[in-house]
Length: 373
Image (cartoon, rainbow, N blue to C red; front, side, top):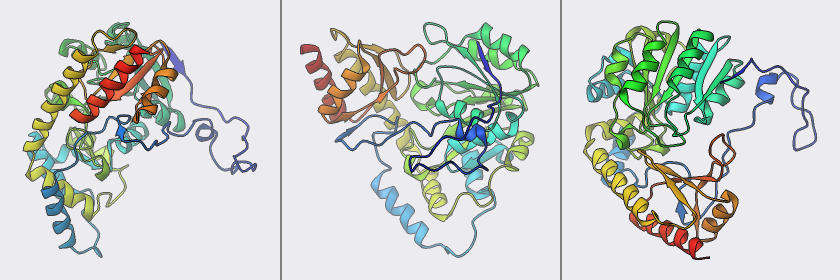
């Protein structure tokens, strides 16, 4: 288990233009690197865990027509109450406990403001980078407990950290990113219940449609618990930027204090309304992704040097002898994936999103060509 105190201001480093950073920028912000992503333009894009399938064309047209029919000179709902009620109906949730924002990344930032500043952000290692980046920039105490060797939750280590470092916010990701591992319900419950009333407990369920897991019932059992969900993955709406939280009305009331007013505009609300009225495509596509994932695993099961690690998400890890060489090989074949080999426990690993059948065929062919070489 590692514990990092709130960041202290370092000396102001020089910018790429050779001038000092503005003196008013907090040291905690200067000390943290920018979000680690550089776009690469290639035919097969498997690097961001997106849905391989776009929002259906006929629904796009309906959303566009709805958007054009509405006035743009008026502010939208203060906290997207109209679409929040529709999300609540879909999820079987009290509308007072639904909080919507432009992407779940913003909710992570706001949850860190809510319960992490001057307190603790507790997560595992490796983990989703936004948890740690926000904790560091906002001056929270970041505590990371290493995953078990099989990527399962370190239950006893997390329980010890919960006792040692309260209060704060705890992130439990199911299925986990970046490994794709899904834990047993018993393990998740043990950790969540150990948090008691001293912690805001966030179960990040961004990929739950692919794993078949669902922790809404566990969230309902405690006022300080929250399920974090998104329309960016299985719904195929990453470009629309819509994330949401399911929690108790009391916690939602506190969280909304931090949500910018009028944060979902007419275009986004129009898209979301149409999606919520036509949810049938989501499970069909999630099932297709799972089938494709298993097909790729079967095709590369006997690769001479690459090992595909078990996953229950729309992405998986490939462990290679040399992640740099494997990455460059795939890029030369028009395929971009995400290197993860700088993270703890992920030496030699690439993270690969499940693509369309044609994209997965390209990945399989490129991987087999590497093996032959």
